[in-house]
Length: 600
Image (tube, rainbow, N blue to C red; front, side, top):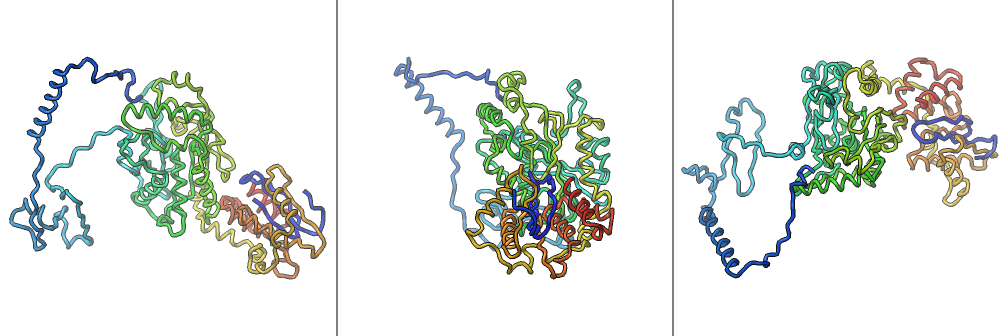
């Protein structure tokens, strides 16, 4: 991120949001420097040659048996005989109810207890070819038998409130927890005592844990089709399709309100689906815009934004999982591809989310937790832990590099393995305190009764020079470098900006009229096009507010808050602490409005 200041000397700032926070200054002093469920033991294969050792009499006997079996089948199950139906009558039902289903267009009310007096809408359902409406007196068909994995996929995305005693009237926020791949709720969030399997703790529902820390929150679990194994005939859903289903499920939750704040807790792959959903919700004209505005708080638990840290583990695990799936007549979920490496899809997704985050008008507060104990994906395909660990040494699956987002400068480490990142043993678990404590900080604006619009109004009260930015109306007709001119100097400035270990300040000096302002506008426009410009201020003597040094830091602070919404809270706190900060000495303005907010 860069701050452009023309005709002004400023000091380099350490910025946690990018590898280096650059300040470019132009003036007339100084120098220009610078990612088996079937037992294989029970299976055997035999090689058979159909022609070996079989006599002509034997073949004839086999052929007769086959013909006899086919004849018996046709006798017991004759083919249905279809007659040409009579022309359908649109005048009304026939006298024979059995024929009316085939020959007439007729309507039947499925809810006979409702009439036009106590309803306001009719819902018409038309069946398809070779079928008919269900009998209202018939019993429901029995649930189809499926495995746990297939059942999750069959049910789709659904939300379940874990603290049903809370409703929207006595709460002010919804907390929604999204699980990862190959699991479901409440299993994802439940710790099981290794010495006593009956001793279980679900930290989302336990009245001593999250409900106790946040009594004014409704807490939901969100289940999505996360089965690791899929039926071969199933058309698998992509991350984007799952994200759209997630958005629909969230918007359809009980007591959903357009302005009701939401905090998400996303585990592993659930985090990737969530950020894809947020990108979709933020698109211009999206039907989920209200959700994007309400979703400003997310806690990520071991989400592999850049794939797993050791792709070789993932590749070996996929091999064993594919063998296991084939033995069961199934296939492995395509979602597992996101754990192999930082794919182009992941890179694009993270880039889209980062840009969407930075363009958000209201602040979006994010927290990332990653593991520090090794794990092994081979344990998913090999039932014996020691065998899996013998074939592949356990390693970190989602480390600080894999869980990293450039817009979250300080991810937090937890001393646990990947499968333990979303489970806590009780209210005294230190890692539960770490996660709950971070949620407490994120929710401080709501719990302290400080709405975002009030914060915006307070920051807007800062006196600023509106015409000082490079793209202001006052600057739009001022000159910029023509193509292929000043190429060497512009290249030098870009190299300086791209160097994470370079100096924090680039000072451009020269005599009056030598093109410093023209170069500075060109640099500002180039950085803005790349999404890297933090703020700009072009002084001009005798041009009202643009000639007042006292407005420089408030103007820069206002632009930075707009560019990096996470700074809003800290700038607001500075104004809260000293309402007259804009009239204080430049050194005090610089420290309170720029240095301290960026340093958090």
